Image (cartoon, rainbow, N blue to C red; front, side, top):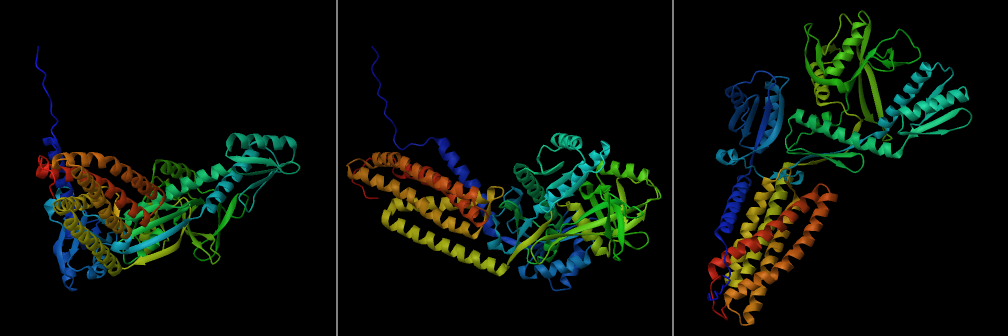
Length: 604
């Protein structure tokens, strides 16, 4: 008979792989947090469209104006001028704009001050929000009335065309003030034919009878909601493209509410150029010119105030423009060179092939908000040119004003035409000095809270308190490293408040564990047994409390925006790191120091 072997459970023992995971995680988070310790330097970014000037030329242009430079980095068609004094950033930008090629994009930026070897590893400093770095915030309103009106006009034109196809005379189609359509037909048969056409081609419209041989059709509420979502999403993408064209880095473009867009531009202290591009709604359309007023034509004013009659339907609209460049033409006149996509190029080619010798008008449209708060569209003819030959997907337009006007128009067209007009309803600027003050005050509060917590834990829990303090320091390193590591994470002033709150949450985990250990020792157990039972019994309580708080943080992040999201982000990440350090890291240290101590009644 084989003798029975007794197996004893080894208390407070971590396998080697857990220590490897702990140390590896800590090293990665430490490297991720280090760039934020070094901070950032003010810089000016230049994106060159043509020849890249030498660094010597740039340095000389700035040195002549007493601008202090740390270094100049050049890679490809981009030049980064790193400055020694953030107060000279705007002055340096103005100097470089004057000395650079007119097509170049010059923008303000902040670049990491960390050593190159650290940045080459892929680590970047924490992105700071508008309230910490300073900058500009715009709140834009997307005017959906213009979209609904455009859909109503398009439907009205289609109904008129169908009536002509069916050879029904006397059909009257009117777009009402609420963007509904009122259709009057001459007979019951015509009424039925028009109803059938609308049901087949426009199922998203409701159709009701209104008197004898009269119909009223209007967009369904579900279709209006769908159009609103699609339009705002398209405008969000266009806004992001425009900001990229301006060269502004670390911008935040988010939807706010049903039809508003919030744009934050950290680090931008001269919002004029950004405002001109972001708030503008520019589009081009090309029309066939008709000799005089006739059905289906509209009158648009030219630069002299004279009316030019064109077909109501444009030959081509701005969404087919894929590239636009402003330059000086052969005759010394400013012009915009336009490139179309494949569909637009074919449309323009087909039209121009049958219109050689005929005039074509280029119309420029923009939107503004009047004194009553309503959006108004202004469309004018900027050029009328005779088509000399068949056009393709590349051609040029003139009559666009000065060279600067041509370049601004080209930038807007290159970045995309908005599907609905937007207007700036709110603008807020935070200076860099206020942002620096927010950082100083926020981190002073963080340092004070952490210092008092470290002191309390060391005095009250003595040796275990030192372990808690070590875990707290590791927690802050991991939290800052995690914020820097996550794409899209931004630290805001409420986020710093979340960091301060995280200190209390992290220490609370250790307090629960240490009190359980004390209880077990008062029951007469050994230190090793008390440690094992203390961590085991406290784990459920810690997990429950942190999960409930994590749910609240996730809800805040999902529903809130801006500062609320900043607070929720640091709070949620802090909960995760505090559980990791409070349970895993603290246990690892305690296991090594007292995990095998079998003494009873020990004070630690």
